[in-house]
Amino acid sequence: MNSEPPSTPKRVRFVELSAKALRALADGDLAGGSAEAGVDLDEHFVGERARWIFGYRADQLAGNPSVAPWITRAAVSEPDGTVVGDAGFHGPPDEAGVVEVGYTVVPKYRRQGYARAMLAALLVRAAADPDVRTVRATIRSDNDASLATIAGFGFTRVGERGNEHDGLDIVFEVPADAIQAG
Image (cartoon, rainbow, N blue to C red; front, side, top):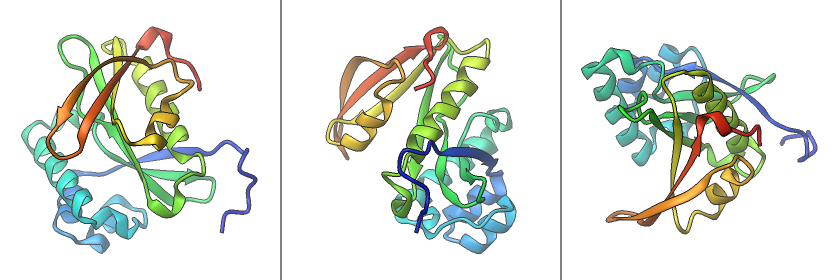
């Protein structure tokens, strides 16, 4: 049980998930993925959707190792060292300087401020890179938690698109030079 008051801002650091760690997780090998990452990952990292995502990221990294600084990392709570989720970008900035954020909080750590901490850290990372001009977040229209998470970070709704698996996605963007601490 978390003994901190809910108003205490959370802090996270990111731990790289190498191609080998990502492949182990995609294969359902939690112990191997944890050993490769050097942190104890949660069972959530080998759930069905996580396995698909980590397999996709492992293939992405195998095809282009230069994407490593941008893609999924384990999010570790500071100072206790507990892995609370994963976060990163879908890849490096595209030709227009756009990067898209992605983050997931392990279910037992949700609604404690970790998603905001992850997003804040990702935004700081993006704003520090001169190649990034815009940060995008695409969120399912029924994902109230994620919609609330991005509030206060300066995102503007710029569009929507249908998604055959999840329904309607809302697309938000914030210029890198306008990133707010949240």
